[in-house]
Length: 248
Image (cartoon, rainbow, N blue to C red; front, side, top):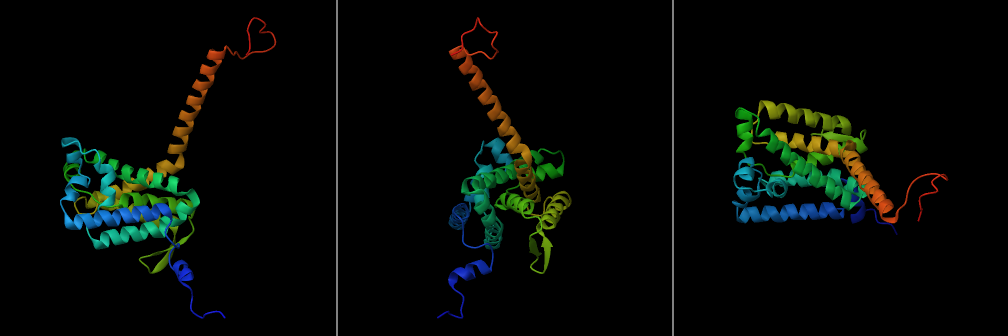
């Protein structure tokens, strides 16, 4: 006899992409744990949040990574983790946990480096960034949004929970908003430049920067190994007329 009520498994798929995948689960748990720590010791944000002045003044080189696990409030972490789950699960299923985790950190660190580089822009814009404290996973999550738009460009997303819009246009709008606000409201308390940096880092990583760079390095390394083996075993490339050379 079939029950007229849906099972818990069907409910899991009725909203969002379904259950957590391994990397998503680990990232969310790490963020929640870090958030609980900051509730007990708020000064942790000053040590592990991203502040360009501390990176160069105190050599706090860990900050471009650790800032991704800190959040300013309940609504901040709730929105970020919900977005990560909504858009990241399907990508992790498609890519695998290892590549998804790698991509997530590339976007997050790339977003941080964007903020650090822009903090050296002359004037009040750069000065505000240089001494500002940035926390949150938004930079990495913007990279996840970009990847989702690239792989599922026509997938509808309900903007502001009201009307559907294709993913490619949704991300384009979010990027444009981040760009405009990063210039017009640099001191608004939201790291728009970091959001924009996550988008750019994700795009460069997926659109050839990673593939071309590592493919070229791999090719050079293999070529060096082949030439080294040839010299070692006295192997020469040539035809039948190379009678004076020994081939092993």
